Image 1 (cartoon, rainbow, N blue to C red):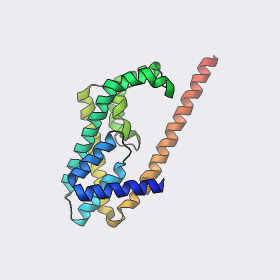
Image 2: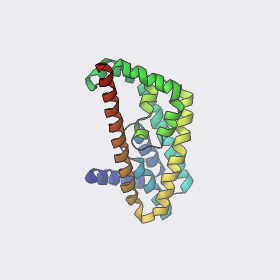
Image 3: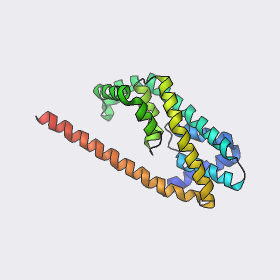
Image 4: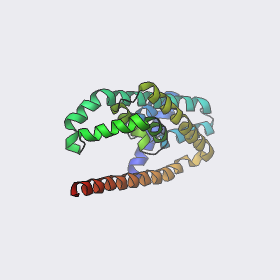
Length: 204
C-alpha cells in the first residue's frame, strides 16, 4: 500500500508542479469522479506550495473546489443515466438487486441532503457519494448545493494543514490512511450486520 501511495504522491506532485492551479483542478476532478487519487495528498501538497511561496492560498482552494464540483457533476450524471441501466441489468453479478437500488432511492429521497453533506467529509465515501446520488435521481440543484457546502470546508482544511505542516505535509497521509481503514472496518461491519439481519428474517 505504501508503494502505491508513494507512486500516487509522485504523480500528484509532478502534475501540480508542472500544471499549477490547473493541475490541482484536474486531480480533484478525477478524485471526485471515483478515480482513487486521494485529496488528502493533493490539497496538502498544494498547501505546501503555498508555504513555499509558489501558490496563493485562496486560488488553491478555489481551483480545488472547482475540480471537485466538476468531477462530482460528471459522476452524478453517469449515475443518473447509464449507471442505473447497467446496475439493473448486471448488478446481480455483484450482489446488487433491483430491491437494493429501490432502498437506496428511498434513503436518498428521505435523507439525501444529509447523506451528501456528511459524505463529503468522510474518507473513501466522499470519493463515491455522487454515484449513488445520481442513481437515486436526487434533485440536481440540491445535490449541487449540498455537495459544494461540504466540499468547501474539506478543501480549506486540507490546504490549511498543508501550509501548517510545511515540509512535513506528506506525514498527513498517515493519519488519513488510518481514517480510511476505520471507515472500511465500519462499512464491513455494517455489511455483516445487514446480511445477518437478512438471514434472520428468512429464518422466521
